[in-house]
Image (cartoon, rainbow, N blue to C red; front, side, top):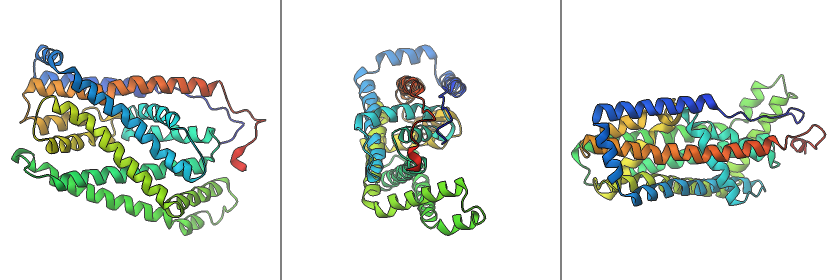
Length: 341
């Protein structure tokens, strides 16, 4: 990024409005088709508050855990970020993730934040992508572990978990292939830019490739630690849904957690911001035999509130504060350009 160019944050109002509208439509359709809204309101009033607060605790605590995923790779390149700052940053990034398609908006915010703190743009991008790959590998690994270790699965659920296991294996294969291609990409980049060896884009990509190689090979213990932290993040995050389901007393604990992983993964791969409608549909299909229509609608409302609406409000507040803080400290042309150091 050229230092002479001022950066201005714009709150993604269109994405926020679209997310809320689509999500509310999905909720209304589910509740209207499945149960009487008055019965759902009655069930919400009777649902134990301790389970709701417990689920919210795990979802928000996951931000702190996830912050250490990026911090681990930042330390690998000699950059220290206090854990609480990274937790706040991940809260703001989570907001952008929830209001953008395919949950892809948070990464750009983290790249920019690391850039402002002194890292080159190529290095910051490598940290975020390497951390993202570690996160996706851990997510697929958790899905594979959960679907492979279940026992005494009810017949009405048995058909879902083999598909989950196959999907996890395929996804792991794709991610490993992508890692190998990144590590062996030097010849490819040289071929692409053979006539533009001195171009800015070629230099940036070479720095990015070098940073990725450094993180994945020379700092492999840090990357493995990042993978372990990401695995812990998903364990904590999906415990929130597990706690919500526990309030309804459905199935055994192991099956309950497996269900939490099964339909909580869906929004990550949805082109609709927040995965609105996708997770509700999966919950409708998977839990239809375990919960009465009014209870299932109640669960969906509670789940959306814990993993979606409340994090959007909190994360959006953090994002707005960060945006105002950064806007008041615009990088000026006369300041040193650390990216050339």
